Image 1 (cartoon, chains in turn yellow, red):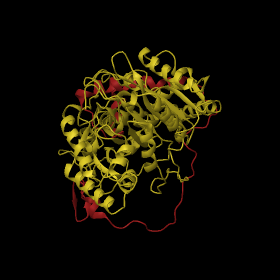
Image 2 (cartoon, rainbow over the protein chains, first blue to last red; image 1 turned 30 degrees about the horizontal axis):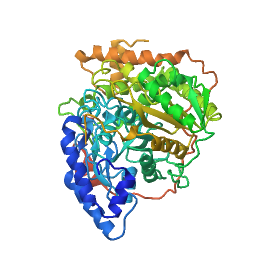
Image 3 (cartoon, chains in turn red, purple; image 1 turned 90 degrees about the vertical axis):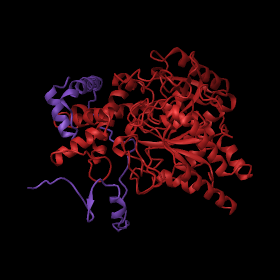
Image 4 (spheres, rainbow over the protein chains, first blue to last red; image 1 turned 60 degrees about the vertical axis):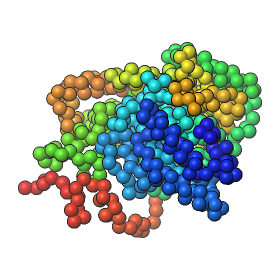
Length: 486
Length: 95
């Protein structure tokens, strides 16, 4: 049961072969045995989860079951929840409980899901390794000496280690897809605006987007069906006709044009990663898809653009943490300004402070045009690269990351090396495009490799359909991590 | 370009983040590495390209100017570090 996908779990619950209480307890037991070494969850409240499961079973008995009734879902600790604290991986919010639920949480509640707990993450979603969390690093279930990726590393590790059937995450520069790739699970960043940001602690608002993590593309589609939808409380939430994201599952791959950007298939990609991605491409070609070599010439500028825009937006968003309305407040201070400065010095970790300082600098008088405005212009060039590419192809295929999971501590001393690991995941959110990552093999060290598919705006059903068909023919996504056996 | 210790102090003050003397060298060194990365943008010719502030060209939606929220002060203030009589407490700012 721990290894089941959503379809099987729904069927088992509907046929009363298992109750939500039993299913939830099974996962809570798994969390209890594995969370010590993996540290994937920050907060678990067994009683609360089991209460929710009991109510789900009652609703089912009354014939009121929704699409996810009784299914346990782990939530990234960036989504505000009234019933569990929301720390965002920070000392600043260590004791914070939100007075309201995020829109995503409301949607899962309405669908009948059980909250299984809040997953560990890089502090305020700033990081690619989960090492910036105030609550300690998450360990990769495939090799506990390595990082799971970040910032949604707790969600990725929880799904990989079968501590949760599915989880939520958020992606600003790769925070869903990169940990999915490094932990051997599936993750989708939807088109900007599909999933409401209401109640999702803000990092870089023009980039942040919630999305699902799961063990199959089919499960991602079912989760997106629940998560996506208009919400007037997020002014960037799109009012669109409701879509069924499973509708592409039988989409013919024959004749489909697969874009292969030379920037994603050249130097800088580890041989072990390249071999797996090439093998996946060969599979698509065998199904009759056609390769379209192309270029995304501004790819190398995406990382510098991102490290101007994201810190700039973060410096503004995180100004709300002032020790007055909620969160940490310093004990000793001389006056109001000193209270702010000490509160923020104590409450934020090194990476968050660094990004606030960078953001403050690029927005400061005399530097705004040279950095911020310039980065916004180059952002348009990057979006233009994709517009030209999607005139020639149906989706773009490449590696999610240039390497597999790296060792804990390996990149913590050099922020730039850490940032460059996100070279292939940063461009899509800059353009606002959807992209997903699915497992496509293992490197020589037995570490999972992620295959990234990027599509045009609102092409989620196509991406999920292509990924689903690939997964019907392969079993990379079904492998169980060797250091977290069932 | 590299930031001087004075510039770092100024930015830290603007950001309301206290940087201790003993950590300022390391903070400066790491910060300068990041600035080295973003300085790559200076060499790009962006001519008359319009800045892109947002992923989608959206018009801000408007709603009727009507009260939709109820008073939840007590609930919201339950999360505050210091409140009294419905007010948030801060250190004295006016002598």
